[in-house]
Length: 96
Image 1 (cartoon, rainbow, N blue to C red):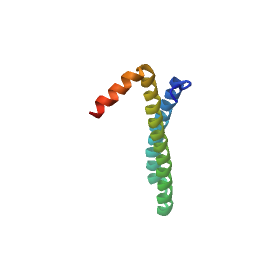
Image 2: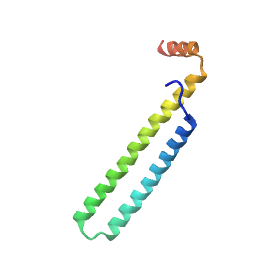
Image 3: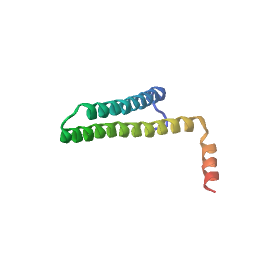
Image 4: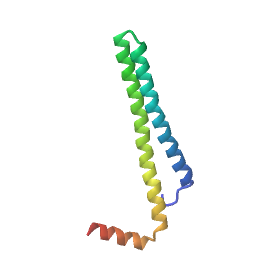
């Protein structure tokens, strides 16, 4: 895994995931506001609100995955720039 193909493209996709998650947050707020204004049936309102929140949770988890991927790609990029001997020295110093 020391050599990733297209790490810049991977990071761009992660940024796009963050953008989409932010958009999903906005859509959730707008949909819930509309729901409370327009839905006369309380049971239906509760069901739809719960469904909207589940869908928003899915986008949150996608963003969590993107964060992990960014960390991996960034870590690989850093490790490729730092000589192995120096990395070991830093790790040993951090553990002391």
